Image (cartoon, rainbow, N blue to C red; front, side):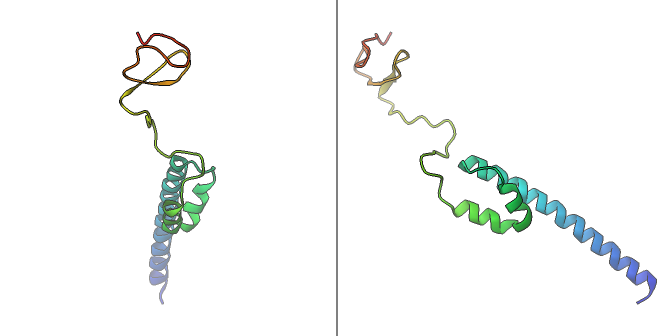
Length: 106
């Protein structure tokens, strides 16, 4: 190979290395964001950085941690109840007073 061919090969190699590093960081950020939404501990960025799409697939197929809900701002009360501001009890909509503390609904 001539010097010109070696220089071109080095340029292509550097472009591929920079592109690979860029994609690794992107996968690291995506995997880290998904892990935080699912409630896992920090540190998943490095799994995404080094293993890329494999880490993302593993994270998406893992179950949510026990005792945690992965949904943000989820209201689990049925629509036919009202929430007592004093004691925090959910009461049936037909009641005008709290069954726990006796506070009026209004």
